[in-house]
Image (tube, rainbow, N blue to C red; front, side, top):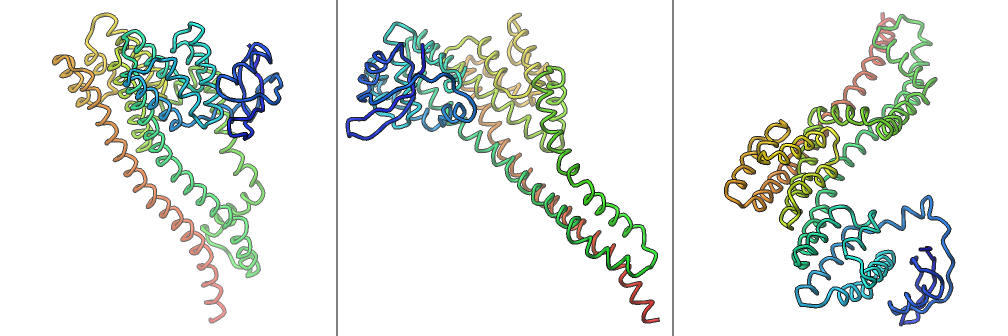
Length: 403
């Protein structure tokens, strides 16, 4: 079905632009009529590429939370699914989401399942979203599915905020330190070097090392700047093209002091949350493990969870599989075992998620508290190196003049 770019007028007479799939312009006109828009002009989109495609898929979690909350409240009030979808479609202010909900409404009205309609837009409605909706369709309890979706999306917002907090501050501080290093080596040290060379005296090793470092940075600044960038992108490209390289990178990332432990906690928190959310929505346990494995975000942990799934498939308890991986703390394994024995695994998994969430907060605070003195120490050591390397020869020169 072709994709059309359109310009239309809403009921207030304001111009509205967007994109919508339709069989032809007549079909597009009818589809826009259903969402109270009057078609002004349209053109078939021959291909969404580049930045436009990225911007068009930029629907924030908060918009999806509002959509699911709206559907949950309407479902709880006994409103039919079609009426609920129409209400959400007509009330949302986000242009892209409005167009998507119009397509979802059209697909469902033609007989498709709601989960299949959402599955046509995987970049916005991901695997977990589709699985929870499908579970609600199978159980006949869509209200509970939408409730779990709201809970899931809010948690995703919180965990993304935590990840940004854990990564942005260290990156900014490293950038500042790197900039300070370049400034000193490119502009400050060369000025001092000219004075030291003019004195004609024999320079100590620490001063010679400073001059050599400064000259290297001046002559090969493009190497100093380029190597980290090239290394970063080369690693990303190799990880995308080679599963073996990607696995080794993820393996070593988990073993970086402090930072690796935090990444492990975030990945395991994702697993526990996705598993708990889907399990409580009625998704079969093997599907829960498989979906959670895909979103854990680390291939090393993902491979461990494959063995968990195989063990459960062969009849072993989930707690035994988690224990055998060696990746989960003993406290988490005990909680899962208690949940299995008591028949209340869903609530226990929520407690596991809470455990990891608290652990992540503590890990982020620890990381930041360690980075600040470490970077301060680096800056102090660099300044001390420059001062000692410069002041020593200057003091010797003044001593000889005095003598």
